[in-house]
Length: 186
Image 1 (cartoon, rainbow, N blue to C red):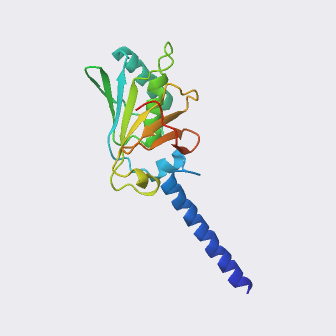
Image 2 (cartoon, one colour):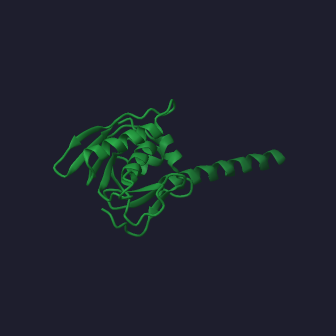
C-alpha cells in the first residue's frame, strides 16, 4: 500500500512538472527567464541592429567598450560588421550570437552615449529558426523586433514585438514578460 502511494505521488509530481513546463512554453510566464531562452536557443538566424543619430566614431567607441566589458574566455564577443546606410548604420552580428548577448548589445547601444543617456533610434531584428524548440517554439519562424522605449527607467531590459504585435519585456535578471499594454515604440 505504501509503495502504491509513493508511485502515485511520483506520477502526480511528474505530471505537475510537465504541465508547468508546457505552461511556461506557451504563455511565456512563470520561470521563462533569459537563462531558459538561452538554454533552448539554436543560435541560427540573423542578428541585426540599426542605429541612427550616432556618428561612426560613437559607434566604434561603443563597440570597443562593449567588447572590453563582455569578452571573456567563456563568452567570446566578436566585432559586428558595420555598414553605413542613408540614415545611420547597420550592425550585423554573427548568427551564432546568443540571445542574451544580443539583448545586451541592444541595451548597451541605446545607453552608450553618456551625453544623451538614451538613443531612441536603436532597433534590432532577431531571427528565430522555423524549427525552434522548447521555450522558443512560440516564436518559431519569426523575426522579432527589439527596442527600448523612451519611457524605460530600469536600464537592464529590452522589449520586443512579434509579427502579430505580441509584445514582451525581457528582464536581464528576470522573466520574459508578456505585455498587455501597448509599448510606445514600433
